[in-house]
Length: 381
Picture 1 (cartoon, rainbow, N blue to C red):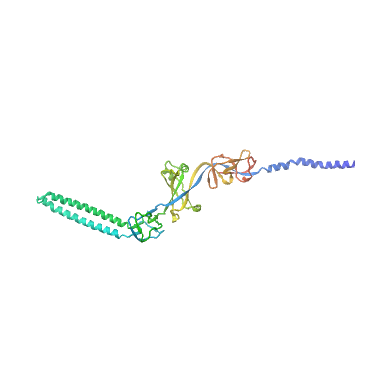
Picture 2: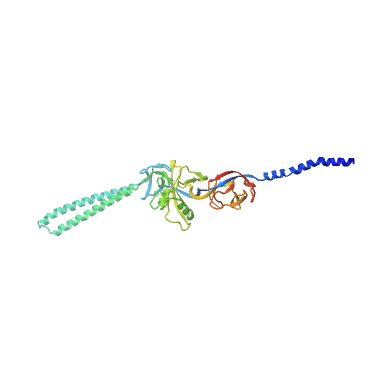
């Protein structure tokens, strides 16, 4: 009996503890379930407009690149400039030995003097015969002959004047001057070299580097997109409204001066399916040189697109996805076809709707159908 009382008492003492555990046992599980719903930051997407940038290899040329070639044959007697020198329009550059051409000029001048004298003599003869004919001393045919001789003398005088002028022009070709302001390139022929108009290489190249032209080609698709993004009805109007373009030097260094589209070729190249464009850049300080390698960076305006920060996306097998929330705050992985990029944003036109919420942080822990608790709303433009 004594043992039975002890057991009954032990049971009585343990019953409140068991009852307490039964009453409170659900609370820790409920708290744990609530704590398992992750809190995530989300962004709300909205339609916007943004630029897509594309780069094209470009060839740089001076706005006034000129190949200087000799127009007469001879040996170079003097070189007045050095390679790389800056020259002004009309400045002497080369002197070709002019002695043979001076002799030709002097001979032409002498022939002109003889022709002038012959005209004078013929005119005197006409003046002498005319009164004789009027007085019927000589036959009229003699006057006709004298006048014909005067006409011949006048023609020879005219021919001699042309010969003199031509020899003067030829003589002037022996002094080669700069046709424009610019910089002297490599001088191929030196003093004493024989030069000729038929030489395959020019004497020197003169580059006017005040402005640099960047020539580049774009495909038909990009050209159509470019035209549609510019205002105006004609190509001239569209060029006038075109935004400034950027020039990228080697190592993707951006040239500080912005350029302007100013030329579109008249037709596409059938072999490449591309069309040639030109952008002009001010060359302050002559930083750009013809022949530099560079790229032209064009902006294509995209309307009614979603700009999604790349940090809010994941890439799986070359496809880009975002984690979007439905009305019940469950996560769904949405494929967003990217049409381009602008800065750190992907630009997309499908896969999202205005007002959609996407996970903006902690993407590594996301999975399809996961229940989440959004803690803040960010507007993603």
